[in-house]
Amino acid sequence: MNGPQDMGGFTRFGPVNPETDEPVFHSHWERRLFAVALATGATGSWNIDISRHTRESLPAHVYWSSSYYEIWLRGLVKLTTELGLITGEELAAGHMLVQPLPVKRVLAAGEVASAMAKTSSYIRPLDRPARFKPGDLVRTRVLTREGHTRLPRYAMGRLGEIVAVHGAHVFPDASAHGKGEDPHWLYGVRFSARELWGKDTPDSVCLDLWEPYLEPA
Image 1 (tube, rainbow, N blue to C red):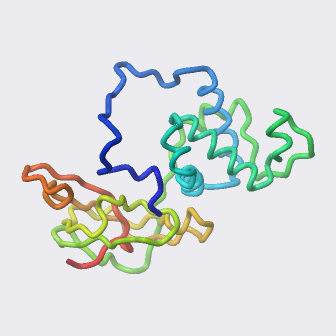
Image 2 (cartoon, rainbow, N blue to C red):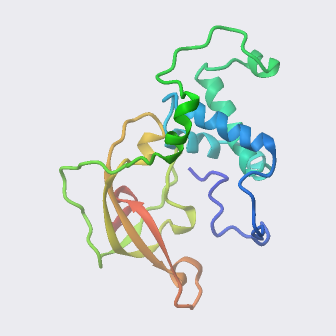
Image 3 (cartoon, helix red, strand yellow):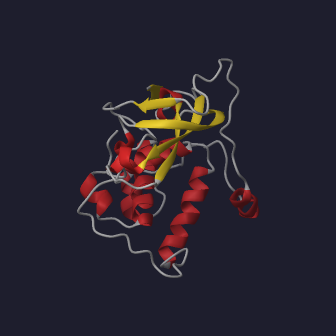
């Protein structure tokens, strides 16, 4: 979907001014929200693609006027209320009012450090060969459908070159909507600055893109 998070190539948003020595958290509530997000995510009630899609489904004016952790908070409220983990009345009251629904897992305090250190692999076996190989020219599809995708809008309909084959990975377009992992081959694709921006420079951009996003050039 063309959501508000897909800002690459947009103009009139002003310059990006990185904060020098930016802290991980700017205020205590952000630290607490991160802990809540970690604990609720550990329940297994959703996956990373569902959480990403929930945040990018926020209205554009809300998304663009919110800070990073405000977006996390709004997405978390949307997820937990839609799944019935909390009610609107509980949200307003700030405490539990009804018996909680059972969840797959509860993250104990002693497990937090290991949970933070743990990494997850999204590589999956696939019994069909990769359609493309390094050196192949491909063109990205123009996706106008609703739903989650990892193909940026600025790279749709563009000519690129396969520079790496990363193996088969969980397909986020399916995973974000509860349709299973549906693994597909994942490629590193290089695009010239001229192709993307019309700039006559030697610069290029590399994107990791799934096979359904690509077609032979």
